[in-house]
Image (cartoon, rainbow, N blue to C red):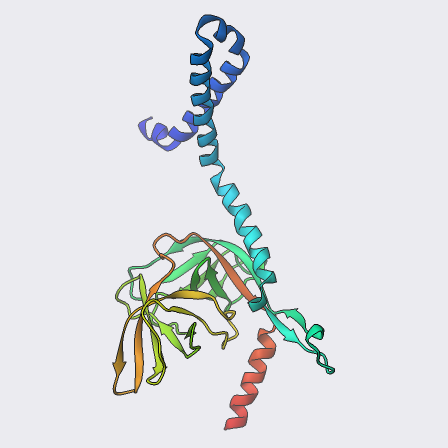
Amino acid sequence: MRDFFLKWRFFILFILLESTALFFSFSKNNFHQNIDTGSSNFIIGNIYESIYRLRRYFFLDIENEKLINENSKLRHFIISSKIKKITKDFKKKNIDYLQQYIYTPVKIINNSIYEQDNYITINKGSLDGIKTDMGIILSYGIAGIIIKTSPHFSIAISLLNPKIKVNARLRKNKYFGTVSWDGIDHEYIVLYDIPRHSIFYKGEIVETDGKSSTFPEGIPIGRVTCYKFDEKYANYVIKVKLFENFSTIENAYVVKNLFKKEWNNIQLYKVEHQK
């Protein structure tokens, strides 16, 4: 019995407050006759405010889901989700854009951060159009890449996994390299391969560079916190503080590149031509 009340305590409280609200709604006139009007309004106002807050608590997930769906639609329209299509008789006004990326809102239902190889499970799968090699992005960052799907769920290799490497760049000077997790702290990743002649500062933003078919260009990842120069490889190793706290992530978007097949085919041609 104790476990029952612990499990359903908020729902029971919700029902009690709703019943109280109904009681005061139907007996408000009688209530006013028995006590001072100002005092009654104060008491009723506080009760209604408590009920409003509790309703907000119960329906917060619904509102969040609406917001996530709206944000996914807005992402479709940003320039980084499109590619330019220029007519032969080029004029500035003739520039058109083709949709390159579309976004599916998902919930993160399982997420590890303290293992050496971390993974993410989401609540959508192949029936929702999710496929392997699709990227997962967050409001401020990237989360991982899909590696396995079932009809209703998918597993992604997390950014907090040394096996994943993502193309990234310094926002100001556009020098690019790769980011990867060093397995130490879930709040930081490392940006590699930035050349010695590049100029950058602490606090500078690191973002995706769009040089892969998985993630759009310009998604913020984190900020430069410190760096050192690697004499052996003649480039910088930069520590990056993630914008997102991976211990609290819940909502995300799966990114679908509508031109991924074409992209991969042309890259394969390049590789074969170099042999």
